Amino acid sequence: MKNVQKAGRSSGFTLIELVIVIAVIAILAALLVPTILGQAERARASRGRSDTARLAQAVARMRTDTSNSAAGCLTVLSNLSAASGPAACGTLSLCNTASPGYICWGGPYLLSTGNDPWNNAYTASEDPNTHAVTIHSNGVDGTSGGSDDLTYIQ
Image 1: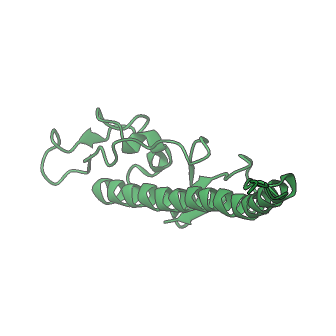
Image 2: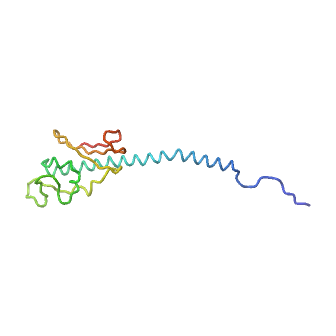
Image 3: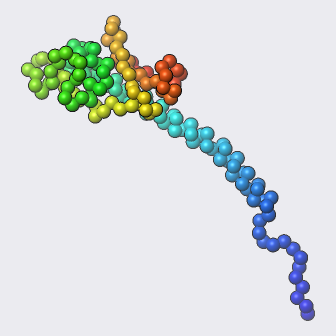
């Protein structure tokens, strides 16, 4: 008997099968990438909201220590982390050197004030009538007044 080979296909993948698999992978990637990138931006916004609340709490602690006598220096955020005492706050003494019962600065209230998640500086302002301090981040675009701004009023 003679060995006769059957004419047939080899056991590999065809070009069409490979193209279809690559197309399916590309479609799935196109659907998932925007979702993943959106999560990163939402995480930055969440961190910004947390940071503004943390800064406002530090301002509140400083206000408690100083009994509002240092109202102008509450908006200088670097004062919250100044180990040597607040700058531009008049004659405000450090609490560890002040006489008992006197108004003093008991900071630092934070290790550092840092920048917002988009690497812009936080700003603070104080309402002269209510003495409410507003902590503000300009958000993604870095300009004030956009829908992406983060504001915390304390």
